[in-house]
Image (cartoon, rainbow, N blue to C red; front, side, top):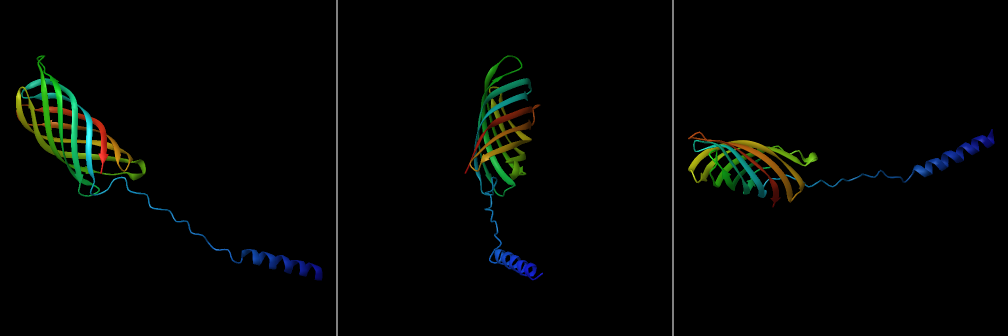
Amino acid sequence: MNKTLTLLAVVLATAATSFAGQSSKKVVVAPQDELFRAGEVQVDASVVGAAGKFNNRNNVGAIGGNLGLSYFLTKYIGIGVDNSLGGTVGGNGTSGVLDNLQGQIIGRLPIESLHLAPYAMVGGGATWANAGSQGNGNVGGGVEYRINRGLGLFGDYRWLYGTRNLSENLFRAGVRFIF
């Protein structure tokens, strides 16, 4: 019995010293940089397509390019302007050039974990073509995928509406550079 108690005392003493001096380690995770931020300046380059009614002409279609510039006042609210330039084919077979300048207020809802930001926009502008010019309003939405803090891909749609039977659909898809 004496040997058993001595052995038990040695085992307990050894076990107690093996736990002494252990410290708890805290794991510190560095915060991930936000992909979508306030104060962003964005430059867009995209392909644009348009289809609809313009200046009382039905079935006007166009394809071309678009450049845009946006600034985000907050993470969620921005303002932007973009210009589309493309060749048109009218309902009666005539062709020409379509120039479309739009300004908009943008509301977005970033989902950082997915690198996505769906957005909605509303604004106005003007469209010029061989058949004349026309002011308009616009409303639409899209989605952006951020590859990193400085580069994104986007696609969006806008409906342009106005006088003289304007009802045009404008589609854009392109790359976004973020500063």
